[in-house]
Image (cartoon, rainbow, N blue to C red; front, side, top):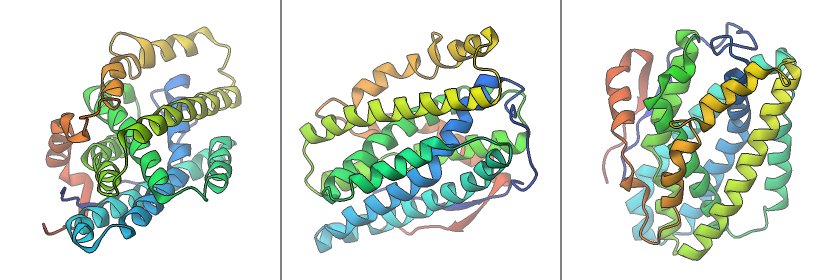
Length: 276
């Protein structure tokens, strides 16, 4: 069981920012904007799925995971609220969140599926966010030139994603979910997540009139596909999820713990769970 602290982020998200808030870099800004656009609906789906899965557990398992699930839901609710504020600025800048609309339609279409499938989808997506989060904490230069408040937002979110990376996976296992289904759902999530993220990034670049500039795609290569880029550097960790004996706790979370320990000035605890 993991103890998860719900934190209130102490940064200003009322002051507007520019379309190229990430150091004036069109691609980095468009890519992170696309990620943020996915979060409010995604985080709500994760909360709903984990709560629904938790309710199916027998009493002794609910007692075992009650504190962890409460902390997970609290952290995800905070992420949803913060990124809704961030996305509000994007909306006022004229960006269209097509990614969110696709996600809403997909969630409605798949609402009839068993809770176990929704938890499997959440666990798969949380694996992606944990990989990206740890990469961000290793490469804060991906936010170079951004205002401190926006750097703090992304690094805080990364730290908490890494911190709660195991919760949905734990609930899936407690529900008796099979490895075969877990892997099949993971492959599906990989395709959908990457497709949606790519499409929304392209849409953002089109709106920013940067889609056909060489500098845009040079930045894309550096961020994603260079030797230690976000995608290329995470291939091995992505494959780990396919192993029968995999558990998210096998991946290092020390960077998350260090960031949260060293940056307490940026947040205040809302609730501190007590171990069951």
